Image 1 (cartoon, rainbow, N blue to C red):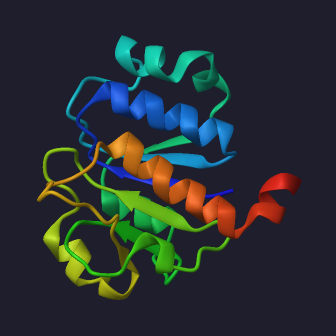
Image 2 (cartoon, rainbow, N blue to C red):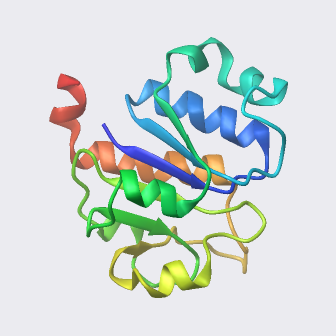
Amino acid sequence: MFNIVLLEPRMPGNVGTIGRLAYVTNSKLHLIKPYGFGEITQKEVRRAGLDYWEHLEVFEYENIEEFWVKNPRSNRHFFATTKTEKKYFDAKYEVGDYLYFGREDAGLPRELLENNKETCITIPMKNDARSINIANSVSIVVYDAIRQNYEAFEES
């Protein structure tokens, strides 16, 4: 359905939870190293992903350059950040889009955001909060993309 891209994730439980979400939404999960934990086989990743992990389409990359060789950038790549004004619900998603999420402690690199300003998206927040948990953020954006493409989701 969609491509969920996690750039240098730090917390294995979040990766497992997002993997589970990817499976139930028929999405692919792309993990770009370095991780902030051991290997993807780590117990916490598998526990949060439950028994879905073995059925998930998950791809690992040594770095973002390797990812882009296999998944060239286009205007169908969306970058979640708190550093833009464009709301995630104002973007028009299509089946197969790439939805990027950065490190839990730092977000996506500033240079990446600067080079992709037109496809940066944000989730509105109140009370001077810095961010929402990454697994929650991925869920919010993926399910809005599904809402916009529900007929295709039902057929997938």
